[in-house]
Figure 1 (cartoon, rainbow, N blue to C red):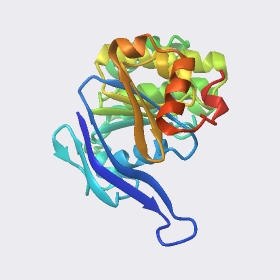
Figure 2: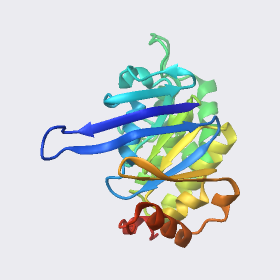
Figure 3: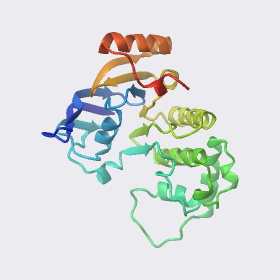
Length: 264
């Protein structure tokens, strides 16, 4: 579903702030894979997400989604392939619109705009059933303005909107990092339900090693723009945080310095 071939990206080239963010990066992700991505600050995690989403052009290499070379496509043209949930719960929804209106926008994504009535009764019932999977009671608050929801409720709604059209690839960019532990666990549980139900190919960046081990069928660790660990199958199931830290130190020759990835 996703193939990245020898992609490199350098920020501020030729200056004192030059930073090689992705270094000849390659990976092949099969349809239905749920991959967790971890690494310290500056390892290249968000750069990888932005490269896939087309936020900026890569310096070299190819990005192929479902057999289509999207390397030269701008961000808005890649949007039809992708669903994305950001770290900030405020980014994925329209605060001044109702819950049902936000869902209607997500459903109409990529379709021609018309002068027909906004939301039909049949749609309202469809959205009500969709919202039940969140187990937050939002199905009984369909006309509530999204700006009145908590951060966790908005992030759960964003997740639902991002997966409504069953994207080729779902990108989760530390989507629980801004939430309290209890809410984060709830959003992760919902993520697992939706990804499993719809067999979505998913890349999830997380700052928490426990979550990286507990979710998905494959775990990759980045360091200095490269994959230094790629663990899947039974090996991943038997992994512990201690094992992961030891393997990081062996492969990279340094200690893992991001406390947030260990705690929580």
